[in-house]
Image 1 (cartoon, rainbow, N blue to C red):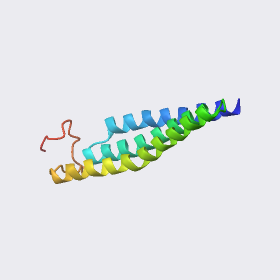
Image 2 (image 1 turned 180 degrees about the vertical axis):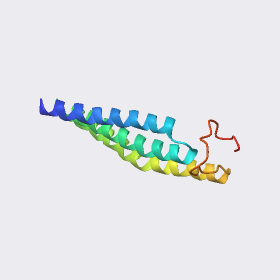
Image 3 (image 1 turned 45 degrees about the vertical axis):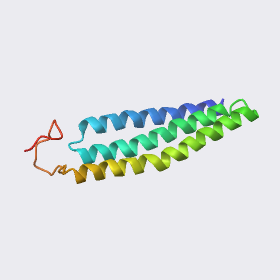
Image 4 (image 1 turned 135 degrees about the horizontal axis):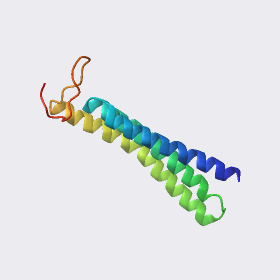
Length: 116
C-alpha cells in the first residue's frame, strides 16, 4: 500500500512537471528560454516517472522484476546524461545560426526566423 502511494506521488509529480514544461515552451518568448524549459523540465519529469515505474515494478519481488527495475535505472542514468547534453548542443547550434535572444521591451516573435 505504501509503495503504491509513493509510486503514484512520483508519477503524478512527473506528469505535473511535464505539463509545466509544456506551458513553459508555449509561453516563453524566445528560443533560448524555451530550450531551457524543455531541457530541464523534460529531464526532471522523465526521472520522476521512471523512478515511480521502477519502484512500482519492485512491488512484486522476484529476480525478473529486479532486472527490469535495474534496466529502468540504466535508462534513467542515460537520460540524466544525454538530455542536458542534447539541449546544450541545440542551443549552441541556434547561437551559431544567429538566433538573437529576446530582450526586455521587444515584442514576442511568433516565428523564430522573423526579424524585428
